[in-house]
Image (tube, one colour):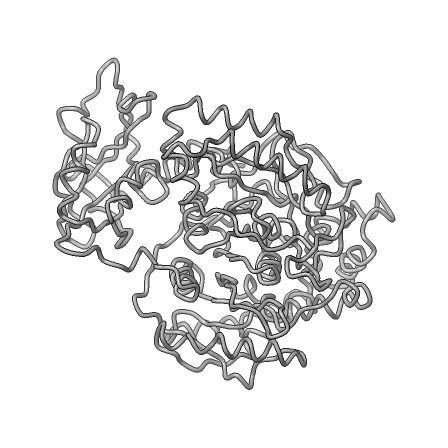
Amino acid sequence: MPGAQPPPTIAELLHEYRTGRLTPTLVADRIADTLAARGDDGIWITALDRAQLRTRAAELESDRAARDLPLYGVPFAVKDSIDVAGLPTTCACPEYAFVPDSTAPVVELLLAAGAMLVGKTNLDQFATGLNGTRTPYGIPENVHGGDLVPGGSSSGSALAVATGQVPFAVATDTAGSGRVPAALNGVLGFKPSRGLLSTVGLVPACRSLDCMSLMAGTVEDVRRVFDVVSAVDRGDPWSRPRQRRHADRPRIGLPAAAELEFLGDEPMRRAHEAARTALPDLGEVTAVPLHPFLRAGELLYQGPWVAERVVEFGGFLDAHPGAAHPVVAGIIDGGREYRATDVFRAEYRLQELRAEVARLWEDVDVVVLPTIPTTFTVAEVLADPVTTNTALGLYTHCGNLLDLCAAAVPAGLTDDGRPCSLMVLGPALADDVVLEVAARLRGELPVTVLPPPGPATTVVVVGHHLSGQPRNGELTGRGGVLLETTTTSTDYRLLSIANALPGDLAVPALLHCPGDGAPIEVELWQLPSAELPELLAGLPDVLALGRVRLADGRTVPGLIGDAAAVVGSATRPVTDITDSGGWRRHLTRSLLALPVP
């Protein structure tokens, strides 16, 4: 049995680096030792060797500026349906494998933030399955033992985190492929709203519903990674910007216990009912119906969306008979039976259900359901692969069809030692509210809702001090709390000043230009007033404290460009990046600039 072994959190790892007790090279060696000791246990399809891990560690250690990156030296895993240049993408089918020459933008953002890739993880072939058994690379063993299936399709990503090998992993979640294995192995599985994470570089399973997802040991680690990878990508037609919403006392929708289905698993029912008892302490609980979520979920595999898998893999199956797992091939071939009229009938029904669920969000902020209704052993799944797989997705199948975001949150064990998990669902773009509720369920202190003690000052930040950016620690380390994300009035321009920090780093600077500007994205942070002088003392000389007018008319102290320093010079050229609308979008545009067809 692999055995659950919580990895160090990202914050713990960064602290060890700052104090000198660890270095990326030491961490790389530990990972290499662990991989060698574990052998081929079905978690990884391609893992970097010691030399490759050490090379990446040395790159980070040699760059002084890298030490301030938000994920400096943090190891991570990537599901093997996501491209990494130079490494095979197999989708758990050797005959399908290819070596891409480019890296998925989500992975690029993680690497740019200082993270260390360990390798690519096992999955149900072609991301078609929720059980983890449909792979020629070995069935990974559930950390809870008992011959339980590991869940899928992102089995390896969940186990890389659950066994303590990496603090976080990138997975996918079209029908529950991230949430189900997270639930079965006791980790946090987060499915963002579709479009917040670029799907460029992901081999599609069901392209109109595909979604990158994240797994970690804590909600705070998910939030840190989400801050790095949530970015608009012009190359992804489904891409859309994140909206940072918050709910100090969320309204929680909860179906009646009698409505919930556990398929005869009474220990799971008891565990779930016990976990539900904490919900009234977290917010206002309101009864909601369960049926629209279940009816929508039924459309996924009992409707024409299966035909989308034919679009991606049908030609391969025709050209390579016998290459695919027989259950996977059968599911994909089943999609050939649908006609255009079936698609429209299903769309009409889905729209009715979407409208019904949309009305629920007028009264609640989130809905809490079980993530899984029961568990199965490997033998049970192999004996009846379709029925058992459908059961595992009972509550997760609806997520992308209804355009929801969701988090699978560990909720203890049944009285016979199997994992229980709660799923927090929210409407599209309510991701931060979902994560706040998940954090409260886990007993983590949600840093975004706790004010600092004593007198406090609200400060506007625009660049390196934003969440997930290199100098954000200068705020969080001084007790800063994120209040909201908003924009300035239309009287500001955003400049990028080259060579303004050691390492030739550019600094973004906000400049007040009445009548000649645009709204610029900013964050409002609350900081203990006693900490403000120390923050200002550490600013680069091109920044100063001034007053910033926001879009709603408020005027708030903020970090702005020093007018005398931003005029530019031969050594510090200035670039106007106002049209990007904000520093994050400028970085995304620079990193992810792709030709538009």
